[in-house]
Length: 423
Image (cartoon, rainbow, N blue to C red; front, side, top):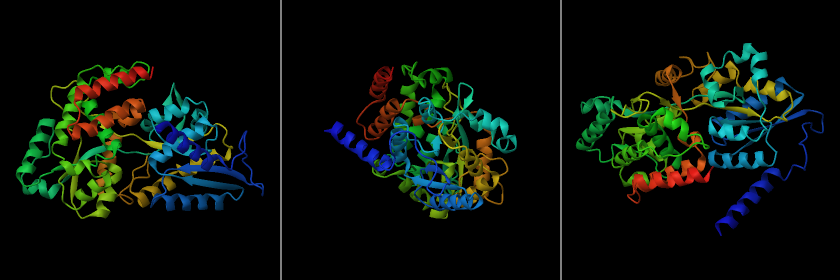
């Protein structure tokens, strides 16, 4: 029955997305002779939807011979739609893409345009893009995407609550546990919450924890589907750490999503929450809390990287068959002017030098931006770093850990089996 439901949904997606397309190569000229560019992003919500609608209008006014068709769906549906489109050779001309494994899977289809020549030929444009952010879109020395947004993950904490109870900002994992104990003693039953119904939020925790406790060489081997084994006991230690943290989250965390958890923090109900820097503006708009942030602290005695900042860029990729005008539109989307407007409107930080300033972000965002750009190393989101089926084992396992229905050892055993299945 599950298979029948899956194929029914897949056929519905295909008919919705591809019904207007005939077989063979898609046409890039409209009836009035304009070049058509198909543009696909994942923000049907505000303020980004209106931002990109306005930018499309602006571009078409500047380029009257071009017409841009826009489509958008949210997050998980976006991932599924892209997979369907790439498998049917019906990719849009330009579309948003996560970096690392998501981008690499698309590149493996051989339907993505390599951009080395584009980057080299227009250094006036490309030199403004933070060079370190290209890594997640570069495979075998070829770059297939242009980074646009940058992000990082840290613990946000309520400064007033910490000061009132004389709690120091933790620098080690043991100090984090001590701080959470102090907060419970001060009357905060759930001093740390998370929306555990969102498996991606679990993956963000696990990815960072594994960075702290597993040797980098082991992670490099296991994050490659061809060599993955997941036999290192550091993963058990990491899962135990996550299980310990869920003990401070309470039953409420197993029933809410991340947005609800964020709103609890913004209302001053919860002292600590693990969030992305992209959420700074959302917190500020939802409440009136003075907050700071600290990186996931070092796990003393562990073999991992104690300072790697979890976070990855997101950017734009171009179909190999896109009309040449698409490159000009790509440069427009990643220009300093567009990037500055984007950050001012949305609050999320971007990868374009000179486009994040005191004029378009607040001090908290500027501090976060400096943390991102000055990080000695960055670690991709876990569900983008490993095979998605293996990530799913860990994410579902994390949910079960929070409710006491499984053990770290059982999760690791299932992950090992899934890693073998993918070879």
